[in-house]
Amino acid sequence: MRAALLHERGKPLEIVDDVHAEDPGPGRIRVRVRHCGLCHSDLSVVDGSFPAPVPTVLGHEAAGVVDAVGPGVVRVAPGDPVVLTPCPPCGSCFWCIRSQPALCVNTLSIGSGLFPDGTSGLSRRGELVHRGLGVGAFAEYAVLPETAAVAVDPDVPLDVACVIGCAVQTGVGAVLNTAAVEEGATVLVLGLGGVGQSVVQGARAAGASRIIVSDPVAERRETALALGATDALDPARADVVAASREMTEVGPDYVFEAAGQASLVETGIHAARNGGTIVCVGAPPLDQNITIAPAVMFGASEKRLLGCVLGSCHSLRDIPRLVGLWKRGHLDLEALITSRRPLADINLAIDDLVASRGIRTVIDL
Image (cartoon, rainbow, N blue to C red; front, side, top):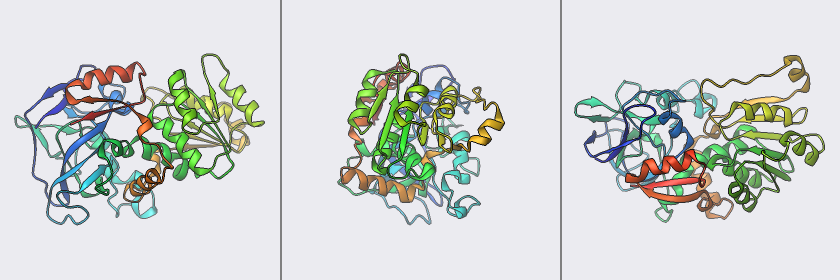
């Protein structure tokens, strides 16, 4: 099959046509990928800021059609249109039974690119190929656990629904699940890529009274305003902490860092009101740290600093929920997609992401 292969961090992806996707074993499926969004996490593997094994097929925000199923699979069948998820819940591990499925043991594959038994389902010339970020969807086929694919109605356009897989689950879920933003709350969103724009929509859906956004790219600020933000700040021209505190009198109730920059987490800590909540939604490089100083003042402020993986979503529940919100007009998925490219242009799409051009590029396979 055709696939975009990363051989070496810091190098362009290579389009090859000889990657083998094996027949699915027990509890596994093979999906014919149709569309896959390009996420900043993919870039983090390419540029080496997120170490991952190679060779690997990246791409984890995808949708397609089930091609084949292994023994014991009951949730989906060949021919089913599905949205894929990088955090498939097993349903029985320590975290799943405690209603924390985004922390399921299956999510270890995001870093390893392997199934728990050490295989990947992919190979090339007899050499193992990793499933990048646990999915490996910049390829014609993906081999996955059964719960990594969530069936959707045949009338749902997969070229739009694919962004639910990561950006929308992460952003909307961060608001509704991780932070549980209540109606009337005030919100500050730092970073307006696909995830940040989804945070904006989640805050709007939650009934937030004020949604302040900050991003250096004017077009992204304009999109956020169209999606429900009430105020937009250019961090190159405004003191985001001072401005957001002035707009809300005491500071926002909730701050979401959605750009993957540790320095913005610190901005959020300073901006949030006493008793407020800061949610770390983005994925900063591993060499970036945050400083909370003095620690006693942070404790005395009763602020809460929360981690967030895929919006704390249970994908089997939340993907249908998000599709339903889109069908009822409460989510605008189309606005997140600003470019479409064929697989052959994957490196041009990466260049756009590096330059912050557009919001989401969808790769058509």
